[in-house]
Length: 142
Image 1 (cartoon, helix red, strand yellow):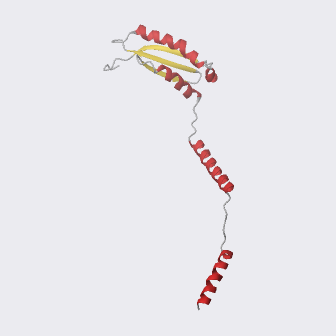
Image 2: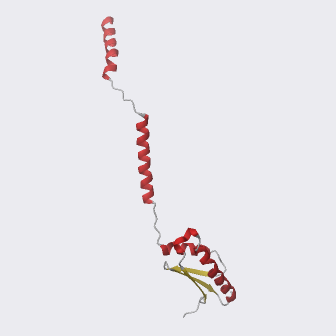
Image 3: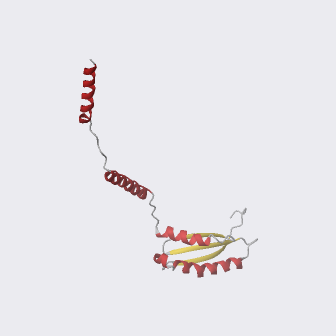
């Protein structure tokens, strides 16, 4: 009986490797699959995070970044793509109009120089208009 049991166990041990299949994963194949998955994910991320700005919007951002840095007066920036309009607003009761005019002269000189930078080659022919206006007095109905 023990002999029969040993023969059965030995037969199973000998036959087991023949019945089993072992797949050896190719490391290069795994690396290629990983790289393809990463490239697909990167392409998906690039396409979903792409933002397109029109010329007028980008121009407004560049000019507003400079203009709004001067906190003494309220300012506005409008752009059509070929023209940038900057408005400086002073309060007659507590702000000096001459200081606002000084700032407008500075903008008239500096903004064209900024737009002539080689980085902004596309903006070199853009006109700049700067105006100084009295700010409406709060509390009065017009």
